[in-house]
Amino acid sequence: GAVVSQHPSWVICKSGTSVKIECRSLDFQATTMFWYRQFPKQSLMLMATSNEGSKATYEQGVEKDKFLINHASLTLSTLTVTSAHPEDSSFYICSARVHLPGDQPQHFGDGTRLSIL
Amino acid sequence: SQQGEEDPQALSIQEGENATMNCSYKTSINNLQWYRQNSGRGLVHLILIRSNEREKHSGRLRVTLDTSKKSSSLLITASRAADTASYFCASRAGGTSYGKLTFGQGTILTVHP
Image (tube, rainbow over all chains, first blue to last red; front, side):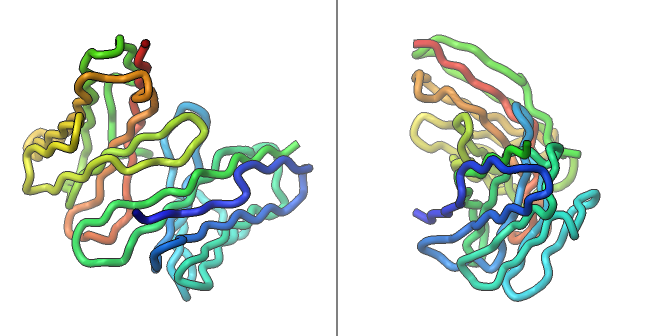
């Protein structure tokens, strides 16, 4: 089945640091990838939709300059949390969808737990 | 805000019992999907039901969809301790197969051995 690899799985860093999270589709091409944020015991909140070769589409309330998304190839999208602060601490999850006609499920990475001190 | 509402928010059962989770949504959908999330992990796709389908089975899973009531249910039969996880429904808006998914609030299922 389709596999999505997300790295790193866990990051602890100081306030003010920028953190990059990678999301790779290992055995399929993903023209579209999605970035979610999840707080403890809550649902997933879509942050942005990443399209290969074009600018990401951000959801309302998500700061574009704070959460930089790059989708430079059909198998890689990155999320950079710039100048991270403690309130950015969260669980970030990416997912990708196989670009085929018809209904297709989304395949998720294992998430990145980000802790800002 | 999340479109989907799920109930119950938490469900605790004994191994061997059946677990039923419900999901409601607000707008017309193209399809509805159920995902499972183990603690601290990503989501795993369980089953997809299209808007023109009413029921679907996959192993011990049974999903129903009632578009007139904008609701779906997930039944896990003969539950196992390994089924302990959070379960989310997610809907894709009508008119598109490529649109974003909107997730429900989730049901935390605990199966006691």
